[in-house]
Image (cartoon, rainbow, N blue to C red):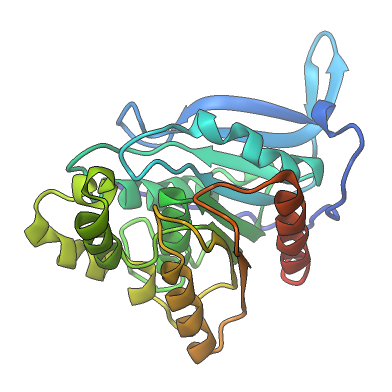
Length: 295
């Protein structure tokens, strides 16, 4: 699938702040196609105001920092709709959001990565239409979606890394990684050895003999360069689905290369298992991190 791109010249952004009445300040367009497959769809949340009849909605004329989000599900399940509530902290602060669906299921690797890359290409091509500030893009996701956020952010820092590369069209200011897979082969081996009934990585990849090649090409730890965007990771130390060691390895490598990064561990956190108090702490860390990189 080809990917054509055109940049957004206007990088003027609105300051990020929490609005008391943010719920009436965004419109949603759902099920927008970015490819030919029924699963290649995305939703766009854009800022503006509700004005009543006859037009009802007036979009902003100013560009906004934009979050690109990938849901989790082990590359084999769940959907973008499952992630809707996770977008609220960014909507509160006046961000635009692109919530992405992708092809998933057993024996489909690496389709999810290809779709994620080409969805970001779609964002670059359609930025003007939705007042997306291409100079202030943040990519995020949880679990397998965390992996997709990481690998797309990393590949878009490596020219000609993919047919849908658009690193020359937009600026990825940060990656917010929620307990994402960073080394596919190690996760697959861990699950196959310790939790074979949970081996989503083995299910995603067709045949054990393909694991090493898929891992070499699409593991974030294999694609870190000096141009890698800043990364903040949230990971529970009790996580048995994506072991905490995945985060440690990633951030050790980022430290070695000198990439801005922050690891937010939770000693009592499981896979997506955080209390309200923990979430408040986590989001304060996230937005402090983003405030340092968003212009």
